[in-house]
Length: 287
Image 1 (cartoon, rainbow, N blue to C red):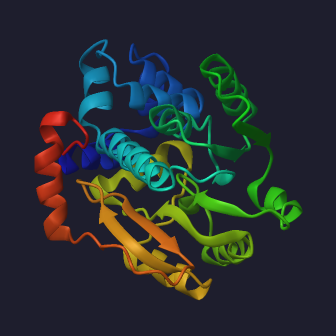
Image 2 (tube, helix red, strand yellow):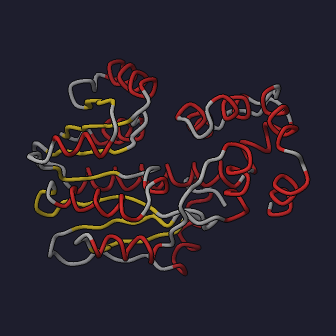
């Protein structure tokens, strides 16, 4: 896979790559050309439908960015379900999802657990908000999942009197410089209820994905290892209670908290391989 990435970034002219994406029979390639990194492209990746042709097969099934996006979503969904099951019986639980897109993984977790939670989901993309609202209404969750269109930092500044039990920062912090992220985390700290948790992740440039994104679309993702994300969390007053890297090593997934309860088990790299192997038959994680 690294060989393919090298060919894309070094040998094929950008104009040729973009022209091929624009006219491709692959829905994912066309959507990524139209709106790079947008929620529609991510939903195509998550759906993982039958490929239209060879290029679509590679984009959906073998492109590391696609594989790891699905792994990340599966991890987040599993964590959400576990968290909701742990809190079962509690009322008035609140979740704040930043850069949420349509927040369909949160809706799915609510459906699977029948959790009594209220969600505030914030995103800049009006089409993501509208899609999430439509799905929530169809699923009967529109009274639980509230969507807000706006810039994350501006929105939460207006909500500093609110308290939340879970914060989801998935697919957002890799776009934020350290100083902006620190300010955001410090603001969130003031909005955490006792024993609240924060889900987030780092980003590591495996398989030269960053070079392709930068060359084609001028997308600059900020690389951070699990240790670097943990250091920023510590500076903001959080502590990491759980860490796990997705199978291809692209996303270090992190759970942190402010509470002083017993620390959850930290999943080591050795255990990750065991978990992946155990779950492969169930298609929970890809490798």
